Amino acid sequence: MNKLFPIYVKLEQTHTLLVGAGAVGLEKIQAMLANSPEARIDVVSREVSTDFLHFIAGRHHINLETRDFRDDDIKQKHMVVVASNNPTLNAHIKKLCQAQKTLLNVADKPDLCDFYLGSVVQKGNLKIGISTNGLSPTMAKRIKQFLNEIIPEEIDETLQLMSALRDELKGDLKEKIVVLNQHTETLMEQKKQHDRAN
Image 1 (cartoon, helix red, strand yellow):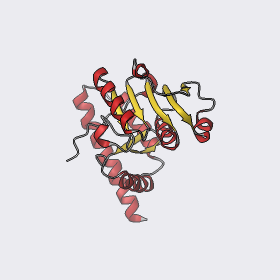
Image 2 (image 1 turned 180 degrees about the vertical axis):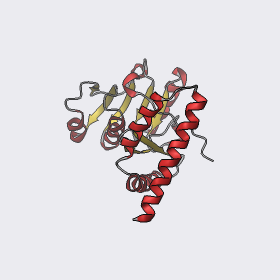
Image 3 (image 1 turned 90 degrees about the horizontal axis):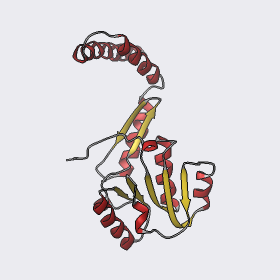
Image 4 (image 1 turned 120 degrees about the vertical axis):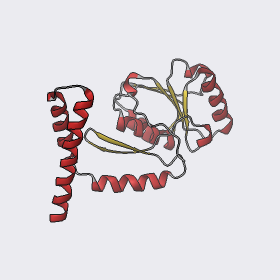
């Protein structure tokens, strides 16, 4: 059973540390910035790949220091993401994060993680996170491809209309939810009829 609690974090309002700037570090920072382009991320790594440097060029909210990790690097950080293949370092950072109650993700080490960076489907303002509880990132990517294909690009227009309708509705929250549920049910039925006709 997947007991993970899904949340959506405003990374531009938090402070993240990334340890490692090689191929895996690049994958991690690309994922974070794809979802939160203004994320505040400090990066610490003794070695930095050329691709990593190219990717962060011109991003002033990314702070890179080319050196070894120091214990005080996690101070004032809300989250730490580690892209290191050094088991001793990974275990050490885990202890530091536990002591400071800082959330930790270690690449390809589910037992060390407090959270995972899952696959994400995004169409405008619609964002769907996919989790396999760390069992199969490959399967998560396949599901992402499937959802990207079946969710129409026009979904964002529908979301904008629903937001406008919600703002116009009178009454308390419970009454608004009833009306919005009826409206979305009508939209879904119209979509099914359209698909059957085509």
